[in-house]
Length: 341
Image (cartoon, rainbow, N blue to C red; front, top):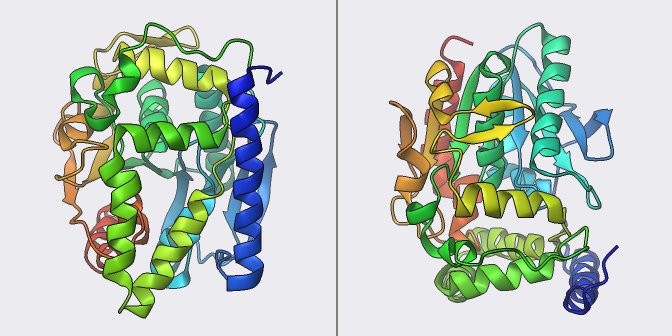
């Protein structure tokens, strides 16, 4: 039960933000242009989408978004859609859509991803390739390390693996001895947004305005930019137990990269990823996810560099929605994914 006064204030802000977003959808046509999909699995924690336009000739893929963001950033517009890119390459595309109102902790979230992997393997007779962005990539990596046989390949997109000294701009979250969540079960998205802006204003505040100004004379860039900003209005309230686990076990104590994480009665060692084919898309200039955080714990990953570009709203999602990314990065990704599939 959300009873912290500060949380109540930010919860009201969440409602206002979403209302503004819906108004923008109706008045400015900024709703995402998603491909058709249907749910193949529905739980209290997540819904497993399967996209309907499916050739299914190359193999299954599971997309794992960050559990604090709406999933449609992977399918924002047809010309910069990760879902479309993979479906057009012949993959059967699935996406784990986290539920607003889920109450699970870190172990529950990892179990949800493993459940999705089991469902996909049952449908296709083989494990899927898994890709995750940001914290979604971190969770996908933990799941793969716990169950390497459930994952054919792992693609990490701007996903932090080593925390502590390597966490970059978000390091302030590690200096507090505990999280002020009390008995609250969910953390308002507006509060997380404020924390992000405070930790990295160059990315989450000034960068937005610089990108907007740079996109003014480019109609397509401005269209993508405005839809990304619209997407930021949809932050939902993730589970407080999940965030407590992420902040304490990962950000503060760095247990995964140190091979000391214990979940679900088992040791979860990042070195177990040596048994999985891993690729990582990294922005070598990022302060949000420094490349050392993304690459240092991995053994001989395939590294694909992303160069920041105009018209993405936030550079952290540039690999997902950037025109240059879809022209230069994703063909390399699809080639890597297709080898041996």
